[in-house]
Length: 476
Image (cartoon, one colour):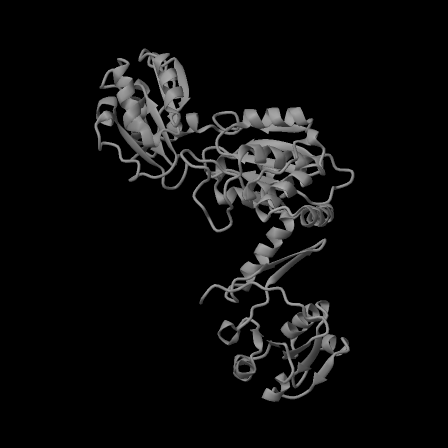
């Protein structure tokens, strides 16, 4: 089907024919009357709600002449009747909205969001009405509750633009600047010029909840498995009104937040957003995340910022904490199981072991300069090195360690998708890892944690413990 041309029709005082008298036709009648249309209903029988509307009712089957003089026809009958309506409408050049019957339709009524003079239409070309309803609900949540102020200011600005002959290209920046002036500059609640950020900043704009004190929880979700969520994390999700979650959050965790709005705010190494699912939107900027949390809390909402691992381990939780402090917004931190410890543990690797490793260095692998600085400060003398977000640079990291004097036989491991059902572990040495082709991140996609040090060789203990249990515990 070619792209549809979205239109908003003025039906006030114009004749519209509604074919059908059932429940669906009743709902369509309400929308047509709200638009001021003069409606004639054609159907052998109609609901009591239609009878009470005071519209003209023709109690019989449809005939082509019913369309004479009509501007629009809505067919809410059986497919056979809808087909007859479409056939009669075509030579008369009348558009047909055939409800849930795209084959017989030439016009599609959209899901409508109306607020303070703003009308938004959503259409899926008649093929997915349930999705239309979901998108409509999401857009209703996005619109701010002070939209009437936006409309009043936009009308005033338009008068000024016409008087001063402001070119079209300059109008959007001027409107953004004017809307910014509606807000207290101290709140940091301003719009950016980007459409994603501007929409995201409106996410929590629902009416204030009297008597409730807003609050933000920076919650660590652990390495991925919902079973590793803490009890406090689950409690925060259940109490949440708004959840901003990151790219690596398992969908099953969001089920705890049944009453909350849930919005994707994710980051992922090497890109601004995570792998997209149908319900996810493009990742927010960090500045926008701050603004959303602050605005929602100030409106009395309970906000959860759900982050993979621990909020303060390469999760920018520290930045979010400072933003909340500066804004005077109450918050708490719910620590999570960091992948820096969980990934090695789930692969049977203890990051410390008496006589083998007495210290652990955790660093990030996606920033080459920062990583180089960290590596220069540590030697292969009883220290376990854990590199997070370094899967795509694993070979280069191994080469850097070898250049710094780490022995080529130093054990190394890479844990991919730690705690997930598809967790996989690569094991070898720095020497083998440095060889081009020994590690292929494309073959093992997902978040990767690199572990380097003698403790990696102790991973065999995991298999030995299983053998001990088989022999001496089960009596096999």
